[in-house]
Structure formats: structure tokens, C-alpha cells
Image 1: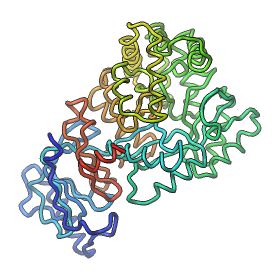
Image 2: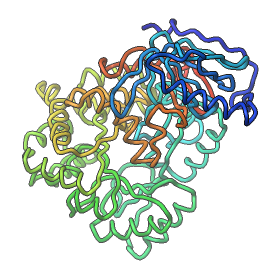
Image 3: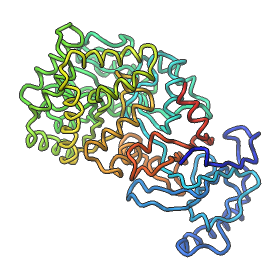
Image 4: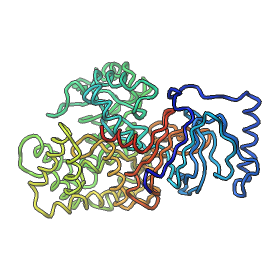
Amino acid sequence: MSSARLSVRDPHLGRPPGSPPHRASGIRQRARRAQLVACIGVALTGCATGVPVGDADLVIRHVHVVDTETGATRRDHAIAIRHDTIIAIVPDRALGRTGTTTTIVDARGAYAIPGLWDAHVHVQQGGADAGARRAARLLGHGITSARDMGASLADRAAVTARLAAPDADAPRLLAAGPTFWAFALPYGDARAKVVITDTATTRTAVDSVAAADVDFIKVYAGFTPDRLRLLVDAARRRGLTVAGHAQPGATLEQQARLGLVTVEHLDFSTLSECSPRADAYFERVIGARFRGSGESVPALLAAFADEVDTDTCRAAARRAADAGLVLVPTLVTMYLARDDALAAQARLVGDDAESCAIFLRDFDRADSSTREAVPAAGRRLMRIVRDAGLPVLAGSDAPAFCAALGDGLVRELQLLAASGYTPLEVLQTATLRPSTVLAGDATRGRLTPGHRADVLLLARDPLTVPFAYAEPVGLWTRGRWRDAATLRALRAR
């Protein structure tokens, strides 16, 4: 379906975004609610009088509404929205009178899903200008919620101020500040790190970051079980959770029981229980990337996957799932095929392009068989994760390596589909599950009356077409409608 097929009738183009809509009196509102309930009760046969939505800001007509919990699709429906809330979803034939100030969008068979989540992204690194561009690109791909995984407090403050406007071209962000290290590795912005060498300073370090109103604490490297417990306890005292990289000396189950909410990346540290040589692979990766050892990281990933014991790994992942852990694998930064990485590089500029070039140079150090072995390694490991029942959230880690903002999430969803996840499971990793796990707010992950109005229109059915997420044709979020052309312009930033 071409985005040009969408048509919009907007009688209030001059009204500022987010301004208070026309509201009926309390008596009229109660009458409308009663009529809505009556019409929903006969939705399968139609509603003779129609559901009036005169106080809606937007009505999306002739749209197929996808249920992210069951996978059912309600065909040819209408969605009525008042500012930030869905007020009605009814068969289009049951729609009654709309108001004179209501914008009407004819979706003409597009598919409606909740706005997407990127559960692992870096928007705030680099300051206000870079953050605004990155945020706009995410929104242009239909990403209305994102979890920022670390930046300096200065960058965080600058980006937060830039995106504070209610009509900003940006997703809602859950954000950490500086990441927490028990020792320093030779990369990254020093301002974006908190290195705790003395356990006695753990609480003070957490308090200093929590005072900047961060949403959670990200743990990076080197925390033994005892030190991780101290970090989690200090975070909980400030009402914060802890998420981040798998830490040494403890199983995934143990780390979950210590309080790690999500573990990031499908790498040697995360899967240390799956091979007796996992620690050696980690050291070899550090040597390849930072010490000029000459080894190829993609080749090391493929070799590690070959050594993983499937039964042992599945059992470890199942125990972690039972303990409540959730995985954010970020496949796109490690298991992307070389040809796909080359295609991504063409859309990157500046430091982001250089990061992708590093990824590609690693491929050049490996033999030709590695080109197929790397994505196959990711697929094999993710099948183990899926079989174990370890829950997964979709995250891109953009702009790391060849993961571009927004496009990285689209590719991540495609990689999950290639790893054996059903179309509904893929959809849930970027909608229903992160809303529940990260925000404790399932209203962001389903399209239901009374829930948050983050509504994304796709040209194709995401339950049948794996690349449907690459074709957003409309988006309502934070009280504003953006059509396909506007979304393309945001992606082009």
C-alpha cells in the first residue's frame, strides 16, 4: 500500500498542537459513554445510531487494528483519539457523528499497532543537537518510547531540555545517566562513566546520579555478586532499578535474583554458562578491538556459537527466565550480515559511519565463510533463548557499529523473525512486553479505549510481512498527527 493512499481532512490546522480540544458538557459525555457501551455490545452487527465522537481530536477510519496480545486483527475499524488517549475503537460502520474540529484520516486499509519501543538505544550521547536529530529519526520510524542506555549528566541535561516541549519530534525516553563500572576499559566517554573502585563509595555514587532524576541505573563491567548486591541495594533506596551487562562470577539466574532487571547483548558475558571458554573469548574480543591482536570479532562470535552446548545453555536461560530476567539481545550490532552492514553504512555519516567501518574491517580480517557464519551464529543462539522461554525485548544499541537510529530497530525485528520468532512474538518484543517490563505500563503496548494514544500505521500487515515495520505511513503521538511525508522527513534528519 502506498502512503499516498492515506487521506486527511483537518478542519483545525490552525490550532496549536496539544491545545485543549472542544469538550462536551458532563451530561453529554455521560450520554456518549452510555451510547458507546451500547454500540460496542452490538459491534458485530452494527450500531443503528452510530458512536458519536464529536470531542475527538482525530479519527482514523478504515483501519485494521492489530491486537498485540492475541494477534487478532479487527478489520475496517475506526479509532477515535482525544489528545493523548484513545476514546473509542469501533467498526467503521458504527461510527457516528464527528465534531467540526475533528481531523479525519482515511487509512484505506493500513494496519494500526501501538507506537514501537527501542529498548536499548543511545540518544543523549553527544549533546543537544545530536540528541534532537537522533530522537527525530526514532520518531520517524514510529518509535514512540525508548530506553537510553547511558550518557554524561551534562549531555543528558542538554538533550532533556531540548526535548522538553510537548510537541517535540521525539519519543518518550526512559534514561540512565553515566554507566557504572568496577574498573575502566579503554573506550567510551570518561564523563559518561562512574568508576567505583572502593565499595564504600557505592551508595554515594548512586545518590549523585540519582539526584539528576535518572530513570534507572545501568551497570557496565566488573561487578562481582557482592558488589552487584551493593549497587542494587543503593539503587533501590532511591526507587531505581538496575539493568545492564551480565557481570562476572555469577550465573544469569543469580544476577536476576540479585536484582538485575534486564541483561543487554547476546555475547560471551551473557552466555558465560554456555561454554567453559567464554571468559577467554571476552579477553580475545578486547584484544581484537583495542590492543591490535589482529583477530576478527565476527570470527570469534561465530566460533563461540559453535562451541556453545545447547542443552546447558537452554537450561541456564530457563533458570534465568524463572528468576524474572529479561534479555535485550541487540543482534543488529553483532550478528548483522556483511552485505546488510554495507547497505547500512551508506545511510550513516560522521562518527556513526566510522563505527560501522570498524565493524566491516573486522569482517575483512576473517575468511569468506565468516560472512555466512556470523548471522547463522546469532540465529542459533536466539533459538536457544526462545526455546528456553527467556523473554526478549527489541533493542538496537544504535548508533553503535552499523545500527542506524530507527532503522536499527527495524533490522533487529527482522533478525528476530529470522531466528524463529513468530510475527506476533516479534511485534510483542517492541510493543506489549517493553511497556510492561520497562515502564510498568501496559497501556503503551495495546490499542484499547482508555489507553495511551501512541498509534502507528503500517502499510502492510506486521503479522504476515516481516519488513512491514519499514513502511510507516502515519503516526499519532503526544497529541499530534504525522503523515507519511512528515515521517520520511524525520527519518532524513
